Image 1 (cartoon, rainbow, N blue to C red):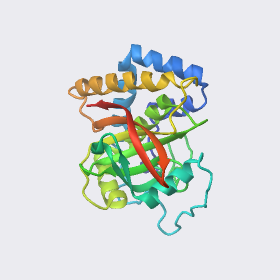
Image 2 (spheres, helix red, strand yellow):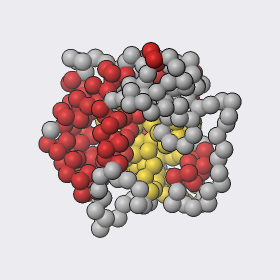
Image 3 (tube, one colour):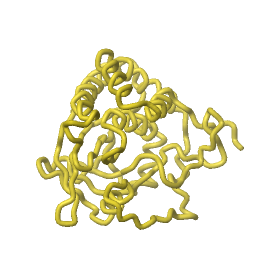
Image 4 (cartoon, helix red, strand yellow):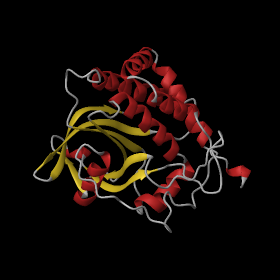
Length: 267
């Protein structure tokens, strides 16, 4: 094992994994804390960008090409795998109220830091080529820029959790080396970084749900985050710019998925 290729484990990824264990009520409180002090989340993000700048694995694919993943047929509409398979077949998903955000499916369940013959800093194997990772990798139809998407359904995690999740994946795919890697192995074309982050809600959360408030609170946090990020990057110019953060409501009509915007936070 090449010890020089140990994969960094960032504080932002630890935060994302911690949130996975938290109740919705706890996540609501954490989101409120970040809204009061958005600089805390900014520091997590920029620290991660700086820590990942040394990671270089641009000559290895994100999936094992010698052992292709097997897609199991999933007919349950409340499963992410079903949605992703439908996206794959549909190819282009329209955002009906604003075509500027329509996107084209590229790949799914990509582990950004997949690295064979090495480990993460905590000793766990870094070879992950099966299910897991960022749900959706796409390109914007009009601007041909990357889109990283997380799909949330019913009893799945909430918008705030998806936001932190996507910020984590963005740091892991936005270094110079990782941009080269993704151009070669994911997009297979020259796409226009920076990326856009899409939170895709399948059948919007009901108002009586405990999670509902996190739609609006996450919008506030995303707007503050992008504003603070733009200011902080002047002093700490690591990679990791974000084009925008978009929250979409997605429903199936006439055998096709179509989206509409719930909110957009612009850089």
